[in-house]
Image (cartoon, rainbow, N blue to C red; front, side, top):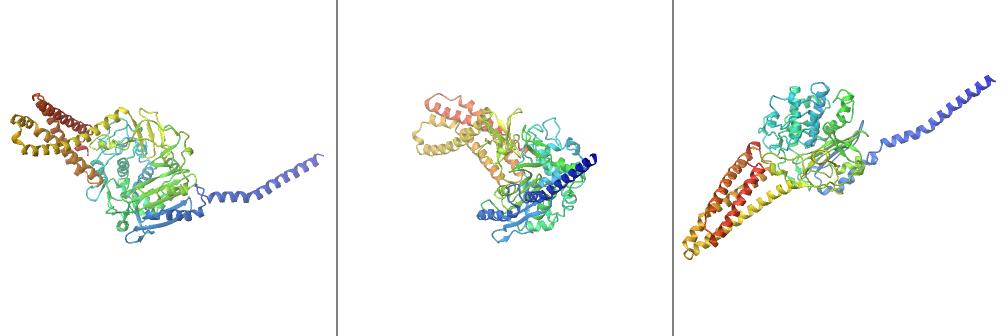
Length: 609
């Protein structure tokens, strides 16, 4: 009986094994089909084999406003799609091709962060150490807080530095001799405590590039060629200030014409970026793709250890108090239907985007010769990564009340007036992820690249009021000059009919009010010149004399204000004199408004240009 039972159990075990084996055989093809189907679908839901047709259709819809565009899509092992559209020179009908070069713009910053991670992996620098340890003594003379600035602060763009507006791009390659000189020439004030506010900083990234120079002992351009371009066989990439590190690229760049988003020509669109690690790289699409594809593969030659790869792409900053990644060691989280990591770039005439979806091992790069282009560098990416929906990331759609100012601005120095820009968030119209964070001393809206800081109603009223009164003062000065001119002509015509005493009374402070109006309009003219120079990307040296003269004029206006008030109070109290005294008091008030504005907006600080 025991023997029979053993045989039955043995037979039952055999039958069970056969059932399992048959089930596996029958279900294996189905599983294989499912896996294969998943691999053939992009994060957007579009089949990979349909991508080229979808992009062709998309480009056709925007053909009227398209100059030139090159795009490539890839996964962890294969290139899925690469194509060139339009023209590098619309006028001469030179088509975009595999030999065309485009400017990376700020996507160049990723070269800095990969370089930093390489040196970190080699134990040559620490991400959380004081960067002063790697810089010449006294280099960071622009710090305002005792808290040290770390490499992670530079990577996260929260070191606290204000914006730099001058000498970012110049036409003369010899204007700046080296990266160190460019950094020293315009050191931005530190206006936020490190780690508290995100304010995108080209200067901070260039400073990280300079640290790479200090640690490695070679120029940043040389370092990138030796440790990134050459290992990846990026033979058609240039990085230096004048692109002289690759003669082929330097010559090909001369063929590239640039355009607006409406395809209007931008003449003379080539500029030397003085803080070149922050945005100077220029290359073919093929080289741009090689770099991006290497970032998607942990077996690439860029980094030696898997742990370093994982750390580089791990969150180093978050959207406020949430667990949504904001920045991953210099790679911004850019929300689409899925979370992507990467960086966009803009120069005077080119735009680019590098995006990686590491979860689905999919990446894309796009390059155009159009300034601030979004049709391809943002919207077309939805064909690959899906459409952004705020609800995918957070259910909180409450719009915070109050005024907000971008953190990427100037609050100290003669460009402080640029910070007079307030706004709010349109929950329905905003196409990017934002989170309101009220945990700090001041509320802030956290965006990718920069925060918007909540400001008090009192500060807004004061700053807006100062500017409004100054505008009124300019108008008053212009009108008073015209009226005084008309009155002077009329007075000459009827001079004999006007009592001499009255003529003398009117002339006592006549020169004073005229001088006040002329000074006000002279300051206005200088401000117009400043704005025009900013628009024309003039070199910083041209601003120094303007702000110095504004400071001198403000001092003279202050003296005139005091003089006028003192003399005005000594006049008699006849009707005509009383009316004249009112006019003089108004003139003195507007002189005070002008001086107050010059002082408040730091327009006299020519040494901090």
